[in-house]
Amino acid sequence: MTVKTAWITGATAGFGAATVERFVTGGWRVIASGRRAERLQQLADRHGADKVHAAAFDIRDEAALRAAVAGLPPDFAGIDLLVNNAGLALGTAPAQQADLVQWKQMIDTNVTALATVTHLLLPGLIERRGAIVNISSIAGSYPYRGGNVYGGTKAFVSQFSQNLRTDLHGTGVRVTSIEPGMAETEFTLVRTSGDQAASDQLYAGAHPITAGDIADTIWWIANLPPHLNVNRLELMPTSQSAAGLQVHRD
Image 1: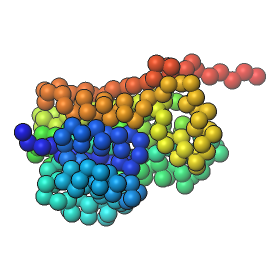
Image 2 (image 1 turned 90 degrees about the horizontal axis):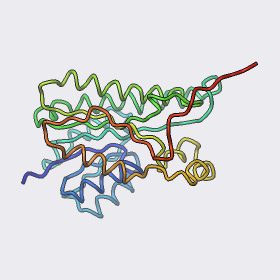
Image 3 (image 1 turned 180 degrees about the horizontal axis):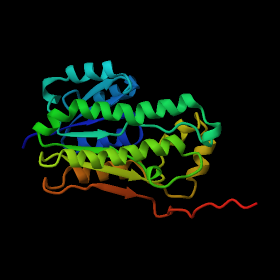
């Protein structure tokens, strides 16, 4: 059987790292990209350079991204699956108190970089009748206080996914938007600038989604028969549901 290759962005932690493990265990080759070179190297050392190719760079750096694509080893050059996982939330303040620098970083990472890597890899994905899995969020569908630009970026990811499906009609390329709810990874630590107490409080007793849950979901989607496409998949822990609308009273 032909060995397939996946490119997983944001592979140094959380959903990305778990997805690397799931696909390598399942027999795929994986290009693992992210900013933290030492973590990527640990993945490559653990599984072997023939199974994991580490590509360390900031996804916002287009020149570095293009160099990473051009420098892929021959065995990794044919990409069958792109998992656009790299992304982040920064800050919990309402819009009128938010940090504009953080807003721009979220847009550059969650929107611009995702669109750029997708555009660069599309020709090969079309040639191989591959698949794209974009990691969105329920924040793109359900607004909440402090969600502001993060929620807007994830709404973009969901809509971009559906428009890709339309444009790629007839090519055989499958596109899926996965939209998780509360999941316990480094997400809240990043959002709160390393506030472990805030992270612990958020997830305490909630039985949140795990990184392994999302990795298993991506694995299932990637291995469906080629005539089936999951357009969008919203996931929440059983303990979470959509809240009611807020009302301000005088």
